[in-house]
Length: 151
Image 1: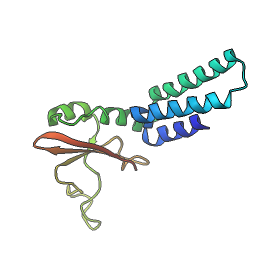
Image 2: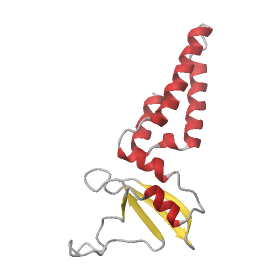
Image 3: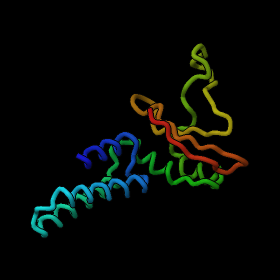
Image 4: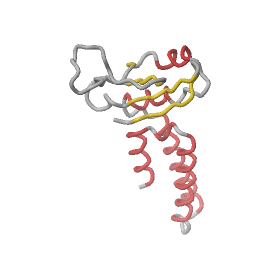
C-alpha cells in the first residue's frame, strides 16, 4: 500500500525527485516490511525487502507524464544561479502564466498575470497541467527561491 501511495504522489507532484521524501518513504517502508515479515524465513524476507527497495528507488526513473520531466528540470535549479543558467535549463518550456491580467481582458492582448521578480514556467499549454507553474524568484539577477504550484 505504501508503494502505491508513493507512486500516486509521484504521479501528481513528483515526490521521488525530492531526496527527503525518498529517504523517509524507503526507511518507513523497510521498517514496516521488517515488522510485517518477522515470521518469514530469512531468504524470502530479504528478497521481499530488497525487491521493495529496488522498485521504490526505480520510481525515480519513471516519467509518468510531461510534469515529471518538467519537475526534474525545475528541481535542478538552485539558489544563487543566474538568469542565464536558469534559462539554459528551463528554456524548452513555456514562459509566463498563460492567464490574463484581469478576467475582462481582451484575449488577443498580451497583458498576462505576472508576479514581480518571479518568472513562471509551464510544461504544457492545454488540458491538465496548463496551470502547473514552476515559480523561480529572482533577487539581484540570482535565484532566491524555487517553487512548484500544481494545476
